[in-house]
Length: 312
View 1 (cartoon, rainbow, N blue to C red):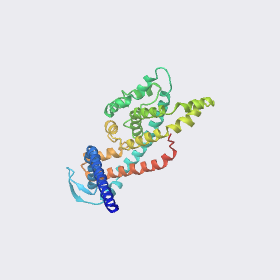
View 2 (view 1 turned 180 degrees about the vertical axis):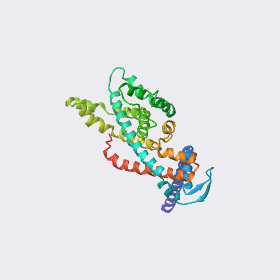
View 3 (view 1 turned 90 degrees about the vertical axis):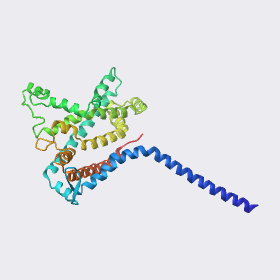
View 4 (view 1 turned 90 degrees about the horizontal axis):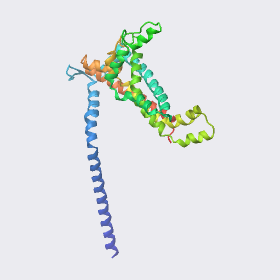
């Protein structure tokens, strides 16, 4: 009887293992089915273009983008030797340096103001976030009129105080700053909303405890608000940083990379090389370099920035 019971137990355990294995396979298939739309979208719009870009970067191509001659790393060496591409790298880093801190600081200032419990503050929140509803093309046209050398409001304002008009988009000394200024204005709406949401998620009892202890406004801002807002700040800085490297629309609308390639950012340089010069190999090499720059800098930012993030 004992041998029979042992055999039954072994059969039961084997059946149980089979059932568990079959259940795992079914769960895996279900998971793949749920993920299939995302996998297809990523494959078509992300993975294939990435693999194709890497492939084309090692070839010379004809005007249709068809690879003709394998050149290895010659495309990379040629663009690094190009003074135009070197200028575009410098301009891109300067553009990031102008836009990221500017957009974050202004948005944080506006979010702190909009977070106060004041009468009619909802109107100001709507105004501060309104740039989210404006397309890059429409915003660029608006700033194009502001920067106009004769009809622009900025030069008219400068003229009223007796200063000479500025060639905002035509002067090499001002063009990159002008594009950066318009970009900061376009990005304020998104960063403002995210930072405002982060401020409103901070527990009010922290401020109540600080009030009981007699803490002042700026002490609470420095010791409570900014540390508790650090996860949101880290997210906003990372997203704004990546978006700044990928800026294209306002450059194309306002300056087309000029004057003297001062606003020829890397993404616009890729566009010119691929769709105006029909050099898809060198354009792909530039795209890979841009990807590596963003990847390395984002990795460094995660390594250094996460240490200062205080999670609740």
